[in-house]
Length: 401
Image (cartoon, rainbow, N blue to C red; front, side):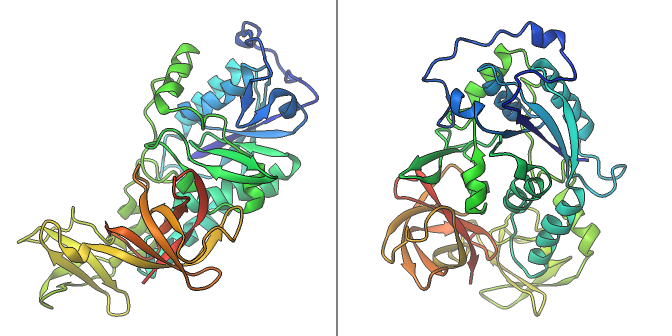
């Protein structure tokens, strides 16, 4: 099963009581100064708090452990199980993940315990995904995993005993006048604030991101210098709970097929059939399998089960410049989006931020007026909104047509 691994710092002791391992005895932390901080917190401040640290089999979360250990802080490990339902059929390299996490934990004198969030994950994140795709929307399971599992179900089971939860996300936080803000990483390619833009305000107040000030290459360099077992391990791709499983195969397993017509939007001519609307996303070009292309998916009619496409390499129907968002989720304050205010935004995990002007319809409904037309805007996608300098993340909302 796919897994997450969480660790906590016990401020009452620096060494785990149940074991001392050779690699830890040989580990010498660097001299600590007043300038040494983790996401804005000094070592003395961290020693006064109970901290849970998410550790996975990847290099990013492993360097999070190093960030604490090289300052003389030695956490215990919690293994959070959130994998697929049938291990034998839906393997996602969890055994290798666990081996990597165990090696890193041992290197820095940490122990492992298990917290099972399996049912919560499948009851909440998977249900969200299936309901959205059945309705014709484009969901983002990774966004909801952060909100519902990493900072949600874990907090209900164990995290409520801790003051802070640290993860390996490429993001940062800053506190201004007592208010905590989510801010972007200096690595625009790896920045993950878009995946965190739906967490609750109380979750943000507990969150810290120890590697958020690094770019990816720096994290790799630290891992190699520390001889971490996963220093050269490739980053995980795709949706976290699927591993190597094809996304369409996953949808087919739970929703099956539901064939319908494919119609050219401009002419109304039928050009073929689709197996199910949920296998397609707005803006999709590859994998459609229709002759006479190229074709772009531009619209879904869920009630009639019709998929609409446009012909051409870059049709105007594949773009939108103005679109509505609803149920805006504010991370810190609700007065940051006045009507006419200038912002930047993104609708998918890319390095680009698009300038826009916000039109406020109500407390939680807005129209985004982008300076340029955006390709592949789809209902159900999260529009993540930042300040004009794309420094602070204000929150996100679902796109609706």
